[in-house]
Image (cartoon, rainbow, N blue to C red; front, side, top):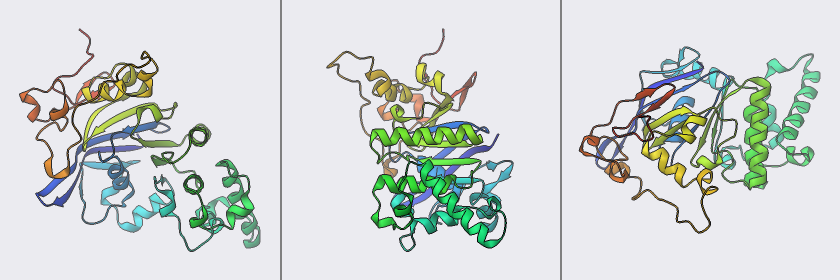
Length: 328
């Protein structure tokens, strides 16, 4: 197993006291696996990614039984030790790519810094030429053909789509073992989105790169996704093989999202009224006790004030007192 997270909890101080923004979340990613984490905006998906990367500010209190990457507990490393892993074996693609690019140097210089010395050979002038050629290759691989102009450009001169492609090129430059992508195509038009997905799929196939894809839309996940985890308001609802979860979900939240996704819309008659989940996701100041889906769940009962433990059914995990679509 490449990444093993057990009981990850992230707290922060609010006007009503200390709150568990993320509540005992488990997440496992195998080597060479594409794992997609799905949830509504504000559900805590990006917090998980930033906790793995060590990008959270001190106002966030992070605890866990383990956050292991290749049997190394990331939470017990010094900042320098963590940077050695993050800089080589783990990379992240951010949603708002433009704000993460350095505005003071050209795109060519930024991508040159992403190329590792271990990938270069020969004398210093030979390495300089090799580094430039690798930058050009990276730009071509993310669909940017006019590399000369792009290398001389600055971040503020790029469109959102172009900036995201540069972020992806920088992330894959050193072929990390784990690539975390936080909604990398949310600002792109459909054609470019499919191009990026194909690119990521190619790198996954070529290098066996594991990926944690983050999305708020089940209809926008990569076709190559092998496992899916559903998160709601900081709690993990369900996790399992993609095919099984998409065809036979066991948690009401997954069932509700599927009923309004592109998967089910394609099967609906024209002008059919789509089902909805009543209510809205709670704020940090008003989190429900127990299962946080309770106030919106059509199957909720009094026992739902206690958050259920994870139930394992074959390779399918879910946390619900009243699961759906179970075999008789």
